[in-house]
Length: 336
Ligand SMILES: Cc1cc2nc3c(=O)[nH]c(=O)nc-3n(C[C@H](O)[C@H](O)[C@H](O)COP(=O)(O)OP(=O)(O)OC[C@H]3O[C@@H](n4cnc5c(N)ncnc54)[C@H](O)[C@@H]3O)c2cc1C
Image (cartoon, rainbow, N blue to C red; front, top):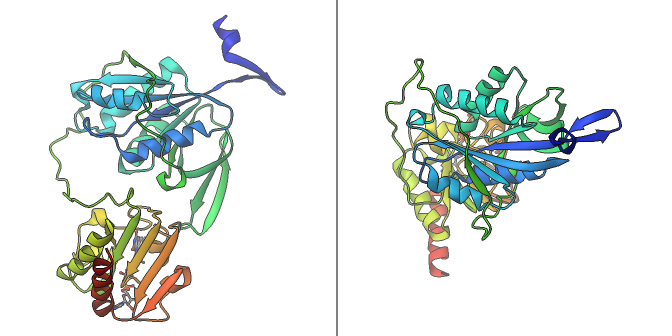
């Protein structure tokens, strides 16, 4: 009976229904925004039947309850184990492999964040399948759309693997709604995590900020080498405060030590797509554009009228940032 329920006839024979696992990213206290985008992506996989979320962590019951109220989630499985402290891929990956062996999902989705990028290829290797990174869409349930060459070409890839394993670009999918009044079933995955003899979690240093997170902010203001030093970033923070904006940076600004590298936007940093992106003293190198060119409106302030950023900017101001930015801040404050 079970077999009949789980098989459907397709033109070429018997095809399995599609069941997707979403790997939840969290820190045991707070759910990561990218999980919501990943759930939406999972619900959009053609022919997908169910979305199951796995919450693996230490004392992560609160997160499991929160995940059960995300729209589109059918079931939440939980592995609550002290050995998962620090979310090391060496300890989390075998848990996901055990889960896959028990549940036989057709698709496994991760957010394309440092957590997902770290874990996904290891899981794929253990299951002996080819993963697909940073997808932005689907053509069908086997065919994924992703970008290559720093976002300058779009590649469509068909996977012949029995299990499709991929990371999802957060900015390419809306966030799923949270706080639904009806909750999905939450159950123990009945899997234990083993400690790793390859790595142990020692500690972490997190950058503290009162501003919105870069990947969730509606407005992002990015500073480049044109700012000249870290102190001068204050003029961007003053502007950001008038618009509840997040502040980001180019790699040149990070490499020069003006700001911490978790603020870097671009190919080797974060990918953002806010309503408004304001590039200040940023030339617009291809590797920077890879991280922000899907923003709804792009504005640029640069003293060089030939700067490549003006080719992607909807609004451009040729001028000295040290003069123009404080004027903008003053005008915005006056008009509040
Ligand atoms: C493999 C690889 C990966 C990379 N990944 C990234 C990445 O993820 N993100 C990223 O950003 N870069 C990345 N880069 C680096 C990238 O190629 C550029 O070097 C970098 O983006 C340049 O940063 P910038 O625009 O701040 O500096 P610059 O190119 O030096 O530009 C500074 C701009 O400020 C303007 N300016 C100066 N003074 C003023 C002023 N007073 N008022 C107004 N404008 C002023 C100048 O006209 C200039 O256009 C990568 C490079 C490589 C090779």
